[in-house]
Length: 178
Image 1: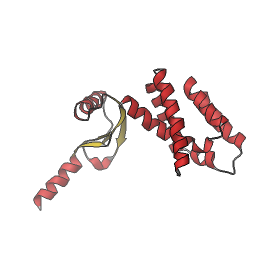
Image 2 (image 1 turned 60 degrees about the vertical axis):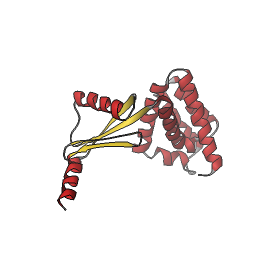
Image 3 (image 1 turned 135 degrees about the horizontal axis):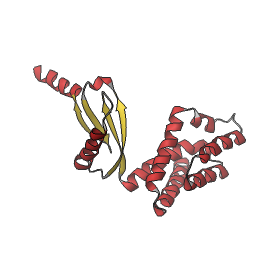
Image 4 (image 1 turned 90 degrees about the vertical axis):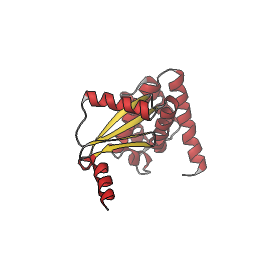
């Protein structure tokens, strides 16, 4: 990606974040952006919006479908993207917007990897640990199930890791035996 494109993405992301913060809608905007990013991840939407073989009206229809379930501010943002014919950059703009919202609100995603789903009590405890040890005041808990963890948890947030897994403990034990 060249500098001109990066500057363009930055401008769109910065503008949306400014509006979300000004209107005190940062948390709900972050949730909506994360939802849209999941839609992009689970579908071929990014490829469709950037494909030259798909007509502009078809791309507009795809974005209008996203607008139907969006808040007023996100819907307006998507309309600006359509109006300026920036559909091909939507996925990259949303990723950058998510990062900027996270930084602005200190509300990082707290990714918890465990062998089994967490109970509500465990979720609360993970949020407390994240607040104490990772200095994350507000966080969105994202659970991942990975049988190779064996037991315990791995907490990732804001480029920091707390590994309390049985797998790590077994690896340390193995290294100590050598």
